[in-house]
Image 1 (cartoon, rainbow, N blue to C red):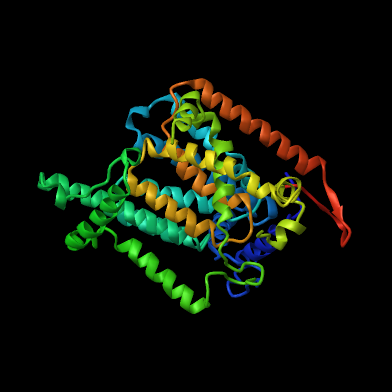
Image 2: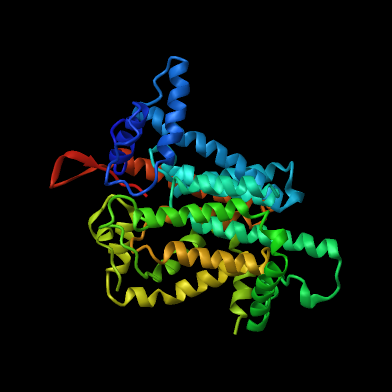
Length: 421
């Protein structure tokens, strides 16, 4: 395993080791996320100490994320089988979950000491608990995810909305009321044909929530507590970013949605792209972050330099690509998902991606996996085999570039730089 600290590990690892030594007051001002990862590693190190092992070395700290990745695999299996009960005890579902666990961008960070694996696991575990109707625990796990990444509060709000929808559905079913005007209107998204239907669905959610507030509040109290604690944090911290705020200034970067759509189309293609979807589609009548331009360790640097900066017209000429990928992605998602969930998902994408001026693929990990668990596992094994093969090829290329193609920055001649997501 790679022994030297790399990239953000130079901040994360020393901070975790401070915790291992019992110093919980020291804080590196370059860190921008809360200490959830370090606390988990600290617990594992304490258990190791009891057993006579030092679990606070660089590689054993990285093992924290291996544990999270194993947990993610079983979470994905449970999520898919909960959303699609007919796939339970089906080996194809396990293959599908394995492919999603192998998702190249997320998988890469399992071997470094970063916050992404823990954040991903806790967010999806919170959603799984919602779908299993263990709402209070789901809110608590969602709160725990905030200690890994502050922006997870937006996912917490989405899961609270899902909890409200599930609760209102149960109320409607218990009343067995045939009056559609006072029941929740939440059809499959693909069936929405007019804007008025979308407005009706959102309106019915608001009205029914208010009418049943005494039933809803006891179910969502842990979610509300999480949001309230996050608000207290914002006031205490004076903003969402801990530490180094100069390089993490929020803005309005709407092209992030286009980049994500293209990214999603590529990595989801083995399962979503088909001749049928293309034919159905055919039947339908300058913002640059300095890190993108300077940090040539990331693949986004080369995407930007080799494609977007080749000519000023490129970013506009790619508009048809964005449009086609968005329509294909929405089509695959909308066929299996309710309108309100699709609406909530789009709002989450806007709130998590648009404020970030930096194009960084790891910001797409949770949105991608959330999207994919709502796509039923394919009945054709060949699709998942194709996906696994594609991901494996990307892994091999990524590992080769990371290990065997290091390079040197002139301002840091004694330190090797390596390609990474």
